[in-house]
Length: 103
Image (cartoon, helix red, strand yellow):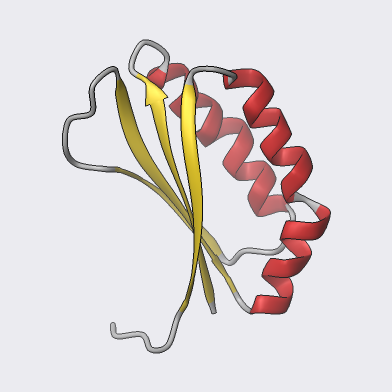
């Protein structure tokens, strides 16, 4: 399994609009690709000057499925986000390979 984490620092003046758009538009579109089993959005604790930071995490069943997402879906979805919030955010992406789960 692959965890795909997108950390976004968003301008505090528009964070409510961003959260609403993420919840109602962007995350559902990402999930509709069929490349992820689940997702969650979390607030990163701590103060950041001028912005609020969130982590959006998606769980993909395999590296091959995640690669399909990267190749076929990510460019358009990321461009949509970038054009909507241009100049109002900073983001970085990380992938992690799950080696064991405990429940």
